[in-house]
Length: 134
Picture 1 (cartoon, rainbow, N blue to C red):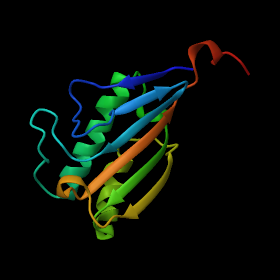
Picture 2 (cartoon, rainbow, N blue to C red):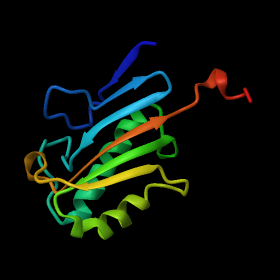
Picture 3 (tube, rainbow, N blue to C red):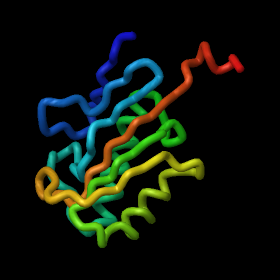
């Protein structure tokens, strides 16, 4: 099995890492902070705006790898302040149509560039040649 690096031109990258790596049926998405790809700057606004930008960054990576939110099986949410949990949950939940992925949410002492949120994800897609197998 060979890995495939996913680097969409419209996904922000701020270090020596790949935005995502596909390995077999899995897609491992690196932690995304609320950066706008066009400027490389943090989105301005409250935790709702930051969460939305993070989710849009993940959506861009999923699409570039030919995956969707329905394929996401695990996420980790890192928050600078757990009092933002309810708002983050509301925005996050809007990206899924039921069958939510497994998830961990933790408070982090600090996040890159002073962000208030970072999310990473793992997606899984059954390869086309195996979809008809029982």
